[in-house]
Image (cartoon, rainbow, N blue to C red; front, top):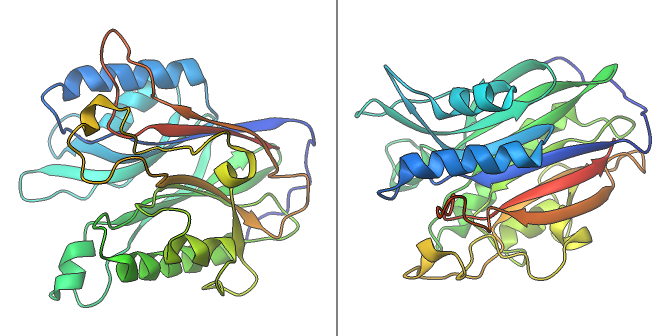
Length: 282
């Protein structure tokens, strides 16, 4: 794998990053939701968008490409098609060039085992994105969702850190990792990332952007969302943007973070998850 380029930057500039779980084709209004998602993202004018639960048809439309075309952004997307010819995957959109991208399985254990089957469709997209005279690495992911499978999520977090390690340069722009982690901040899997437990890769820990700069509880899985009126366990913060440390402060410092997707567009709430928009010092 190519080594990261050290970037010492244009301090004071900002890079705007969005992460959002788009709820695939669930619900009977998924086509209207797609339009609401595109409209919301257009207003945000982000530099980088990390999307989870992207849909694609093996012989037809692709949501990542449609959003990229609508927003004028480059796309990193590696769909994996199932028996019905549909994909449930992650994508990264970028204003600047995507130098390289790859998709990695987060399956745990033997694929024929219950654990392997439960986690087999989870992936991470890793992209190297041009920034000024250098580049930055971005990871977009979506972890196991079942409440009782923390051990699987912890194994997936370890894999994510191993994927990130070759891109980690303490003197360069930090790695950004974002997505739906399906775990609350006090969970073992999140504490592995933030250094509250020994990290999977020594010397690589992560700043939780909302914990540093967010206002309020930051519930991305919220009982205020009309799609969650019958949810088993609403009012949780399970979607994150993380920034790698150590890093050359102030690069990667958080200047702002807020929830997105909390308002309807033409009467349509875009997704069952609220997303995040973050600004980091570039």
